[in-house]
Length: 184
Image (cartoon, rainbow, N blue to C red):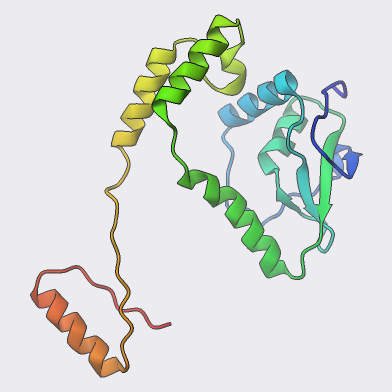
């Protein structure tokens, strides 16, 4: 299906079968997510290209979008080629692209407002991964928030010697504090 509109900047439209996944990508995409990505791309068009390294020729960003394109029999995907000085930079960018979005949170009031507005305007919410029941969606999100681990509060203390580090650790353990020794 090559009639998916492209709204993002890109360097080239490429047959998805010509792209090579990065074997070091730890992010795995369940089939349910791939189906939702495919629906979103078909509904909203391409809004983000797949990033490929000029250095290695491997995908750095967009493994899920590639799988969605293949699953949806799309004949072309937008690709942005980027320069990386090393494999370390490629892997760091790949990992950051996967991790940094996880650090955000959803404002439940704004989510409800947006879902209600889209529903009132007959937008197919399931095409973007939401149900037709905004109240249930909010309950599920709030329930998920309850499953989050307790926040950690850390302090790093620089010591002038290993002996000073051991002395401080022993003192903190005696006071019942949870401690870890780091050597940087």
